[in-house]
Image (tube, rainbow over all chains, first blue to last red):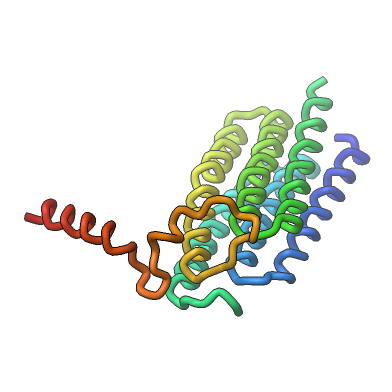
Length: 90
Length: 131
């Protein structure tokens, strides 16, 4: 692949990670942070896909599957935790 | 030719992800942020997985990418629903420009129950189903 194109895609996704991380830092409530965390996991799945194209290693897609699975389980766990704890501010 | 299509798909996917991130930063409250992150984020992942399939173009990669895409499409709404439910229950404030909140008049945030009328119809239904 063209390295200029790959680098620009990497830069765009890093920018997306940075902006989502800003929301993760700002909050203001715990559910907002969980939403930001889920978006970060989704961006990382895309990152792994682009890296698989870059290096030509198809096995990296297994990593993407595992990351998507873990993100879903983390979101469910956080939601249970928030609901049981009963307060929005942290 | 196929290289061009792969490149366009990758750029589109990363742009969708950037859009989701900007939406999550700029939108005013929890449900609208969720609206940005789930749809645009899943769309970005789908575009990039399509690019991966076109680049490798083997059956195994197709199966894996299809598994990722199906998993994302199935789990993104479930996770968003669960987090939105938890956020509403613990009283995350909605944006002051919110037009419609149908649960507000029927829901008691202290006892986590619906109002009296709904509650009686619910218990009647439960009694009918249990007897």
